[in-house]
Length: 457
Ligand SMILES: [Zn+2]
Image (cartoon, rainbow, N blue to C red; front, top):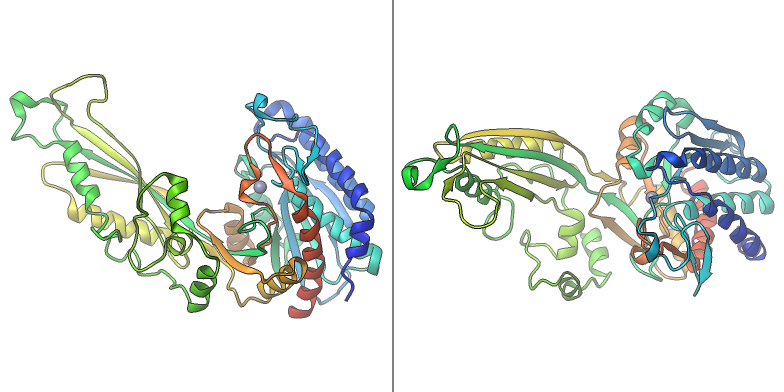
């Protein structure tokens, strides 16, 4: 099997200078003054896609910033992968904290500094260069590829779901590959195979018709703030578990293979405590902190409001109080069923004398590609070979909405083959990309497409 190493090495300077050209375009999707830059970036990508030999390259309208689409089908009947990425970037303020300006890329200490270097222009560019290398070395691609690069990820991918739904046939693929996440740590090849979902609600408690004087009514009138905190306190057990009946019912248990893979990472709970400046890591019993962060659901009170908030004392019995609650969900929890369970619990435990109103704020299920999926196995093999170290399975406690969109709309599983590092200041001043992962990541992607062709044929 060819590996593209020589080609990528030989063209490295040229590739880096092209990437710098791409990074110089200030494609900040949140600021309308950059509208023309969004289109310029899309045009830059489309031109590059045409130049390296992709076909059907098209800038497609979405109602917002355009997406760039391209494909190449060298393997009739063979597996097809859809590469998703984004060309838009986050705003750059505060500007004075940047060592060099965000849109004047510079390499220092083996790291490329610029907005978008890692998230996500750098990683999108890696895919283009791997395609270029495969076509130069072999004249064809080992799998059929489609590319969908959008320009609104940093502003919530507002138009993407409709775009995907309207172009189902065009985007049809066996697997979606996304390079927009981070490795577990420097030098540790790792693959994210699951993300948590979300469910959100608000609880509102109302007592008397209005706020009351505690001298006149204290001792008899229901206090909305007290009722609220009593109610909220019933949501968790003293041991840290969640007390809502049925909350854990649909949770897919961690397999022994997953627990072993997590524990092999050597995650330090002491280091996390030191990082956070806390003396304990409370949570559900029976699981390590890492297992709780990645693979167990949570119920968090995000905010409490009600009563007197001003300076000094006010002898008032508040008539209203409320709280915002969100849950991180894991496979296979259904957000609606979780919200049903919480609603039933709150109604059953509401203290006397107050009215309870629950506002459901929606949610999204967790996403997971099973670790024995052929595309996951191909990615693990490619990462291990390129990095010369055994690749690790990791999850993330957060959510990437687009992964859910691909699952829901196309029914396609995602492989999250990201090459960033958490310390690379995504969304912050001095964003950078370790060039060791630019180089080794491309070597991994080159191998991945070949392994995918074998495992999914
Ligand atoms: Zn990103």
